[in-house]
Structure formats: structure tokens, C-alpha cells
Length: 117
Length: 111
Image 1: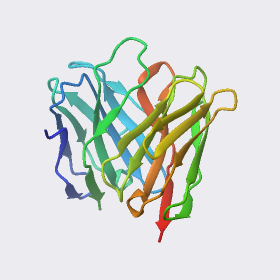
Image 2: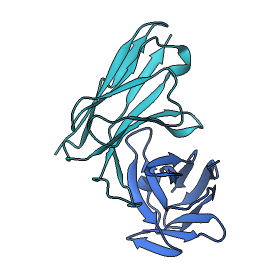
Image 3: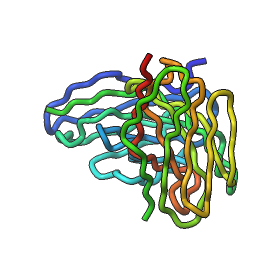
Image 4: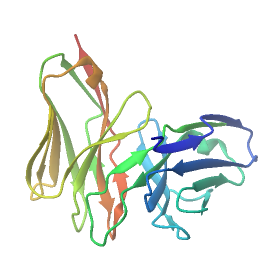
């Protein structure tokens, strides 16, 4: 049981280059998320998808775009990478959402370490 | 707005008990969660408190006081493998299944 799979694990970009981070989950979860983690900053939500075909901005969406390709896959795109986007990126998914459910348990992928030079 | 505060580092010895505190600010409380992260790896869910009181899961317990906007994670019988970062997390107001995380507490367990 793979859980949440992210690719690539490491990436180095030059300023202005573009790339897409891939994420797939095999747990039949409706909700998927992209977080970034910087030293001393904890995890910050970039974008969120409640279900296939829907996306929503999180705390730090500027400079990113997302696509919920189907129920399994949620990709994050950097159109023009900047040094400020150097970070570790985590994808996560959670239990099927029910109205007013609050005990969300997120399952995280192993992360993508991105450096923008 | 919403925010969470945790101590940045805590040190304890093997076999001891340690408490990691979390204070929060939010309107419309929807629960406090705890996650563990080893050395930059994938965070993993530990515990959730929706109501006041103590939730116990093996050596780990989590406590919540909504009137004090305060919670803590209690780790008993510490083991070296418990050395990790611990994060408390809150649902974003108006979107209960989007979590915001505290900045994390790095726990160092010493022999």
C-alpha cells in the first residue's frame, strides 16, 4: 500500500524555469493538499482540493498553480521559479470529507526538496 | 486571524515524561491535532482533541482546554526514537478540513 507518492524527491531549478511536482494517492481520499515547509516556519498550506475538479487557495498560493487531474492525482506547478520558492514541498490527502467533520487526519507524502538558484 | 505557538525546542532524557505545549488563537474552534515528523520526513498524525480533556494513545496523550485556548502533547517513557519535531494544527476558520500548523517543537531525547 503506497499511500501518498510524490515525484521528484529532489530538484534544482534556475530562476525563471518552470516545473511540475506530481502527487498521487491510492487511498480513495477526496481531499488533497500541497504544503511547503521552510526552516522555523512549520508547514504552510499552498493549495487545497476538496474533490476532483475543485481547488482552493491556502495561506501562500502566490507563484503556484495546481491541477486536480482526477481523484488520485494533484499536481503543483511553478510557472517561473524564484529563489523564495526554495523549500520542501509536501503533498497530503485526507479521509473522505463529510459535512462538519473536524477530525481530519492527513496522510503525507515523503516530500520534494526544491532548490531555486 | 489564526495562529499557534509552540516552544521551538525541548530536551528530555530517555525514560522520562515530556510535555509539549501549544497555545492558539482562533474563532470558531474545530479541534486541535498533533503530528510528528522525523528529520524532515513525512509528518504523521498522532492525535486529535475535539473536546476538553485528555486523549490517550499508548505512550502519547494529548490534552485540550478550550477555555484557555491551550493544548499539550504528553510523551511518556521516552525513547530515543521519539526524537523528532512535533506540530500542533488547527482547521482554518470556515474550512474545517484545511489545517494550519504551528512552527513545531524539536524534541531531543538524550540517553
